[in-house]
Length: 318
Image 1: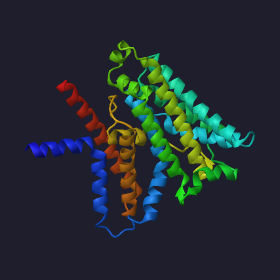
Image 2: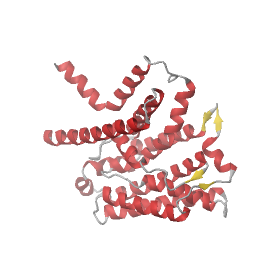
Image 3: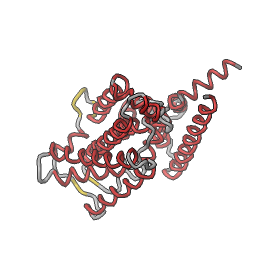
Image 4: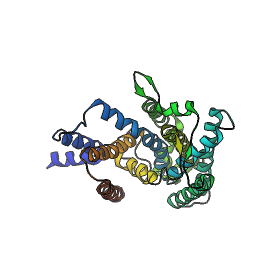
């Protein structure tokens, strides 16, 4: 029995990795082109933007928050970049879009930290505001980019035929991993998420840390929006409608708990990869989009229940 319990505990800790291994094993028995280099590379390329969104969200979740405005911010930043690049250099247009994302994150952080507003409520409201602004700017119509250099950012291949998006994703993964693992800011994020009051009493500037996490998350969402518009060569207010829920839940799948103080960028990466892998498997098996939505909805509900259950068990043992 002790061996079984150990196995169960390991599965609980690494549920996303276990799910990935099970799906990879399952696909061996189906006659598909799942294991072709093209499919695997294409899957990583498609997941890259969501993965990078998750890196920013991970900071916020570790600090004990959440951010459901990232989808709308991603949509708006792409539109801003495309609109501005006709009147200024491309680099400045991208910087302006990222600055807008940081500003939205700053406002989120203000209400969460200073006004003690629930992160779910304020970020959901911010998402609605940003989506409304995006629709107003575009009149709810897609905006096409005309700059070829902009298109090449996300669609080019610079190193050994590997798509730029995958290279950028790996670089961002390493940057955020370093921040959380080897900097005082990263260690303080865990302390703030673990126990906000204790962190404050121990001399950590908890308000600044949590506020900064929201700013970084907003800037990262804007950066991802620029990449998405570059990849699709258009900006649209409908981009990112379900992104926020998928990314936040993907982080939890990997082991970054909504309770705060637990998880990390590698865990969130694996969690999002598990969700993307599930979608890819269902596509390869010819499962309809409607059934896929039902399956993903059930999985999200189970994830939230399991995370809440695990947190209650943790509190009972303390």
